Length: 75
Image (cartoon, rainbow, N blue to C red; front, top):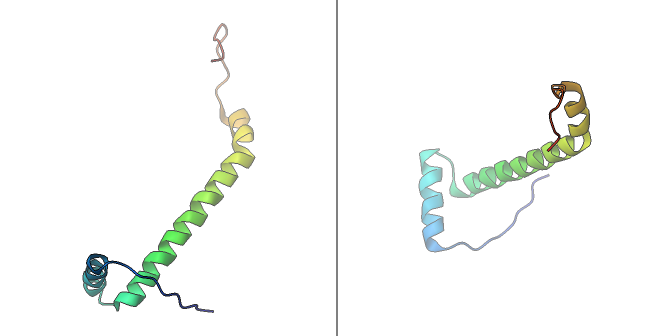
C-alpha cells in the first residue's frame, strides 16, 4: 500500500531534484520516492549486517581465525 507524505524543501533542492528526475525521465515526485526507498533499504541492510555480525562474529572468529603462534601475545 502506498502512502503519501508532504515535505518542504528549499527551492534550490527542488531545482536539483527536478534536474536529477529529468535525467532519468521520471517525474520529480516519483524520483524523490525512489531515492527515499533506496535510502531506507540501505538503512535496513546496514542494520541487518550489524545484527548479523553481532550474532555471529565470535563463531566466525573461532572457525576462521588462524591459530596464534607460540609465544605470540594476545593484544
